[in-house]
Structure formats: C-alpha cells, structure tokens
Image (cartoon, rainbow, N blue to C red; front, side):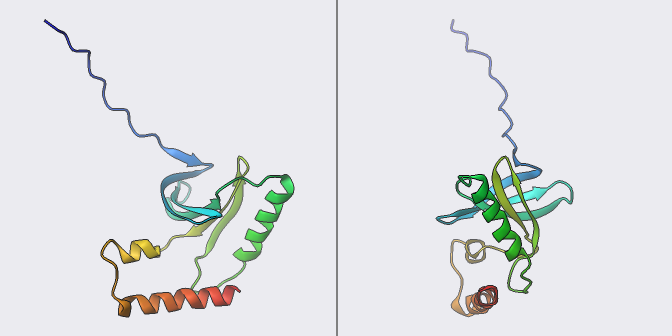
Amino acid sequence: MAVSPPTRPAAPSAVRHLGRFQLLRLIGKSARTMQWLVVDPRSQQELVLVLPRSQPASPEAMQHWLDSAKRHARIDHPGLAAVVDVGEHDRWPYVAYDRGTTATLAERMGKKGIAPAELVPWIVQVAQGLAFAH
C-alpha cells in the first residue's frame, strides 16, 4: 500500500515592499519608468509610486533624478496628480502620487473599451495637464 506524502498548507503570498510602501500591483510601465499601486501604511492611503526601470548609475545621476522630480512636484494643476513624496530607498528613487479617485487609461477603458464620447473629455483633461506642465 503506497502512502502519499503529507500535504503542506499553501504558503501565503509574499508581501513586497519598497521602503515603507507596500507594493500591491504593477499598473503601468514605459521605456524609462514603472508605476506601482501601493499602500502607505502611515496614512493607509493608496498611492501611485513611479520609479525608473533601472537604478541610476551614479550618485550624480541619482541626485539629478531626485532634483528633477522635486522640480516637477512643484507644478500644481487639476489635470495632474498631486505629488505626496519624492524620495529614495536602496538606490531606487521614486515619486509617490496621490491616487485619489483617478484611474489609469487601461483601468478607465477596461477590456471592452470606452465610447469616444466618454473618452474625449478625459483625454482633453490629460492634454491640458501636460500642456500646463510643459
């Protein structure tokens, strides 16, 4: 009679962090950056954490990244997400944005897409925010 090995309970999924932020899921990426949905345990607030896809190559590059992020954080416009924090953890610079009631384009569109009449006002707001920033 064959005896089967004892079964182990399923291991809980690992909780990932970047500094104080709990990483929930990757919500977007570009050629240079990645965006994560995170929770800040200090405020129990959902944020969007943006960081480069690779660490800055030198202390000077790190400082340049942080200085640029801090300059951009001073821009205030209703079409742009509010910056909550600019910082660095383990040589990973980041910008934390208030998620508020915002949604990514992929989240807004969903799998079925979105009617152009509903999409146009949202895209206009995005374009106005970008124009103001530039």
